[in-house]
Length: 330
Image (cartoon, rainbow, N blue to C red; front, top):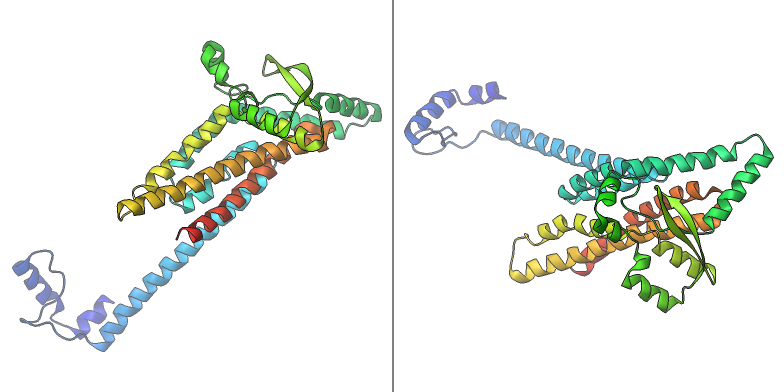
């Protein structure tokens, strides 16, 4: 390319050096006398060829990035069905696609804190799988019966128990006190009252080294499903999910334009964030509870798969909701 330019314009190098001496380093184009010379068609073709080549490479890189994000998302959504750690990270491709880098960083920290609990979930699921393949029919039936009786009752899930935060919860009573589920909040009381959800019995069960009351519910499957789902949403995890959306809301307020443009942008992001939290956490709670109700003899394994499916469905539904919000408030 350089030799081509120099062959067409022999004075290119000298004129450029002269022009920079006269006008400074910012003058990086050849000047011939006081008037620029018309660019030769051959040189123009070379320049346009290089520009088109760069544009082509840029487009290919963009397509490759999108394909990589989609492949990563598919891998996380699929593996998240059986691996809780991947389930926690399955929204990262969506965040990166939206240039929200802060949320994945915070999410990685939460995932690291929850790693011991995730490993414990997988261990319980592994025991259910081992029970399925026991050679003795009597042992299999005994294990299934024991699991079915235990999984008739739903214990409240904890955010700190089985994680690196458990020692802090033991030391600081206030942290242990707020580590409860939506079932024990005013919102939970409102849902229980409106749907007529009532307890049919309680059973003391040891979870994470602490005795907790597991609950069974009266009524049909719908009431039981909602009651169990409320027990599967720790409020610390819920509000942490809210906190993870704050960077996206702050970023939405930094768009260029008038005050009303900023208000509109923030409003759209608030709707997206609320939809994401509700769909993902609601999907995990409902699908996890439904799986245990359907397959109580292998409740731990069923819950693991159900939560993964619910989380994946929530992420995909959230993406569609975001498109709807963008089109509605365009």
